[in-house]
Each structure stands twice: as C-alpha cells, then as structure tokens.
Image (cartoon, rainbow, N blue to C red; front, side, top):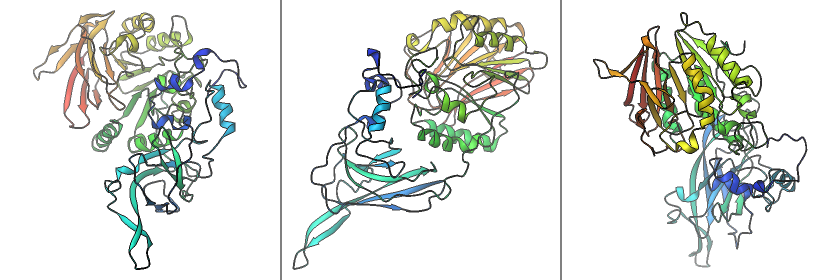
Length: 494
C-alpha cells in the first residue's frame, strides 16, 4: 500500500475502519477479489483419497495451459474450487505479518485467508461431468471384489504465465465466502524464472519531456498484423490490477501481440493512481494502493519525471497532448502550465492536427454526476478552445460516445453528411473540439442515462477506434470487436 508516512499508522480515520467495505465499491472487486479477507475454516471430514494432479508438472514454459485434475472426491459440490497460489511455499493458514499491513490500511478484522493472493481460481463444476460424478473411481473393494467406496474426479484448465515464482494448486470447498482447504498439489516451477518477458514499445519522440478485453485485443491484433498501424493509445484503467500485482503479468501477456510490434502509449487513470493520502486529486481507493508505482514502472512514457504522467508526442501530422486527470490540473498548477505551454508551442503548419487525451471525460450521457468533475471542465476546457484542439479523447466511462463540436455544453458546430453519408466536420473555420469517449475496450459496459443535445452518437458495445490522418483530413471509425462492423464513422477536414 502507498502511504505518505514512512511507518505504520495506528491512528486511523473512522472512514478506514472497514476497508473491506470501502474497497468493495471502488476496485472492481468480486467474491474472488475478497478471498484474502476471508477467515479460513476447518473442513469437516475431508476424504482420505483426495489428490491433485497437474499436467504438465514441471519446467513450465512462459505461457501454457495446465490441466488440473482433482481425484478422490466423495461428495462433489458446486462450492468446490481450485486456486492457483504463488509462491508455492505460502502459508495458507495464518499470516501475522500480513495482519500488520492490513492494519495500516485500516482493516482490523481477522487475519486474511492467505498470505498470498490466489492468482487464479475456478469452480471444479466447470467440468460438466464433476457434479454428476460420471468419472468414478473405486477406492475400496469388499472381499468379493465389489466396490464399496467410489469417488469422483474433475478436471479443469488453467492458463498460466511465467510469474517467476513456484506455484501450487490448492483444492478448497465452501465457495469463496466460507473457504476451507481440502488438499494441495506439489510445487511447480517455471523453466525460465529470470527471463525478461512481455516487451512493449513506447515512443521516445517527446516534446513534453523537453471481460470484452480479449475480444478487443484479438481484433486489434488482426489490425496490427494486416494493416500499417503506427501507435496504439490506451487512455487509463490499464490492467485493473488494483493492488494485485500478478494481474499486471497476465495483462502484459494479453497485450504482447500488439505492444511488442507498435508503440503502446498510455495515460494514467483512477485505477492506477487514486488513493487517500497519496497526492492524487481524488481520494478514492481506486488503485488498491498502487498509487501509480506499478503503472510508472511498466509503462515508461516520455514524461517530465516519475509521478508526473503527462507528456506529448508528435507522429507525422499529429501532435498528441496526453494529461493526467488524477494529478492537479487546476489553473496555475504545474500540469496546467505544462498543458498551456505544450499546446501553445505546436507548429500547426508542421503538425496541423492537435489531439488531446485524458482519462476522465468532460461530457458523458452515462451517470454524469459521478463521471464528470465540473471543476476539471471549468479549468481545462478553455485551453482546448484557446489552442484549437481538433479532437479530445477520454476513457473512464465504459462505452462509446461522440459529441458535436462542443464548448460549455453548447454545440458550436455540427457535422454535415458527405456523399457517402459520413459525418463531416469542417475545421477550415474552427469552432470547437469534437470530444469522444472510447472506454469500450474491456470491463463491464455502461448504459446511457441521459439525453443531451451535444451527444450525437452513443454505443454500448465492446470495440476499438481506428484513425487515419493526413495533412488535411482526419478519418475515424469505431469498430465492434465481435462483429468487426463499423458502428460509427466521421471525418474532420481542414
């Protein structure tokens, strides 16, 4: 956990006295995410025949699928599950040292279930033959050779990536809410625990320093492999690890097919940075204690310094200004002054297009009270108009929405249809930036709760945006990642 204090703090604000409830609404938690806050109970009458077998069982590659088979189960239950634990020598019964760290965050409840967070977990009932006990095995015969005790088996598959520690699989019952341990496998090791993995590229050309996820990444991979792609931009809420470091490993493995081939540029979001007492603008515990440390380490953008995650890059005819909505953007702040200086220094004869990016939006038709900070809009939106930003892109809200050329809630210009029916904005007589939310790459999609005059297109589907830019035209398409259909398109001409 991040902290502004170098030592443990035992004087806690009442807000933090139940950090389980506090984190539950902010860090994309689930039953599984709360496992290490459960109390381990004793299993009643475990079967003496229980065993876990894993195939393959040694020298694991950097990425592969393991078949985990549980045998010797007397009474299969829908609440039986298997967890992948790291490291393999973790103590699954008590962890007093971890208790001190939980107390630092304000969690004074009983000690957690595991000293180490389960990396993955599955219910054994994912094997359709498990609960019906179609795969029986006789364990005890009578004197006449008749089976008098039979047990049931179940097999499930785990994808694993090289997390550089030994792992083991533990068989639980009682579900995720009242778990108890039945048995555990032998340790498994990776063949190359010290090998560098998941390389990804980012641009160093900077003037600034001077469940949906799978379908989207598959579609983007096809784009990268089939057409000329210069860069990918991911505007905050990168992995949703929120304090569970191993999930960064799985995310980096997920994006490797594209991030190792083209520049994978990022902006920081609330789930990477925000935490009380950490210096972020918003004091929610959305980062789970990461406070931007993991993000800054994994995605080294061309920023002025650590924990100053704003930067700009230029590619062909486009200048990209990327900011942090989680750091101080108020008028006169360091980041505000940087924004003004950066956008004001763009040579529009050399790079005629100016695209602005940040995580939290200025306009949304989905829960605007909780998704839009009016102070951010008041402070930063005038800069977009002043420096004639062509396009402003945001995430945070999990859907797709495109505005007119908008300023202070009013459409200063609306597009016309070209001969092909594509919305066309004429920026030869600049009016205001077009703004778009492109938060539809993963997690759970948001519905639309409002209707606004400035909102022209609203789509709640998983997908990605592709943009083609020349010196005089910006052409944009939103592509559904499942059907590969173009759901929205527009262009801006100069």
